[in-house]
Every structure is written in C-alpha cells, then in structure tokens.
Length: 91
Image 1 (spheres, rainbow, N blue to C red):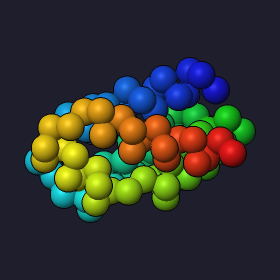
Image 2: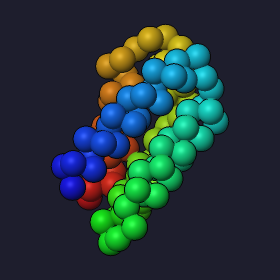
Image 3: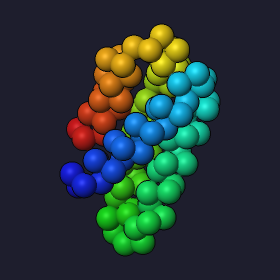
C-alpha cells in the first residue's frame, strides 16, 4: 500500500508540474490518466484496489481550488487539497 501511495504521489506530482497553468478539468483529466496508467500496470487484486483508491481521491479532490492554488503557486495549498482527498478515502 505504501508503495502504491508513493507511486501515486510521484505521478500526481508530475501531473501537478505539467499542469501548472491548467484549469480544473485539465487537472482532473491528468489525474484520471495517471490512475488508469497505474492500474494498467497491475492486473491483479492490488491493481483493482489501487484503481478504487485513486478514483476515490479524484472524486474527493476540489479541482477548482486546486487550479486556483496552482495559478497562485501556493504549494502548501496544493498539498493540503491532495492530502484532504487522500484522508477522505482512508476513513
């Protein structure tokens, strides 16, 4: 589980950097693609769990606030938004 969280964090981090000036829809689509890429690499039960986990995080991410934080370059706010989404999926 920790390994997939680290991989997910790296993927989301890359998406974050690439979409600095993007809007909420672009950011969400990047996260969806990252989730799909991660689950395609895993064809077993863990892959299905990873897919559900990242889908949950996508569903619980406020992409409007994320886009605004990216435009402002507020890294602390970006991390907070992503952390809140992760925490919502672990309860």
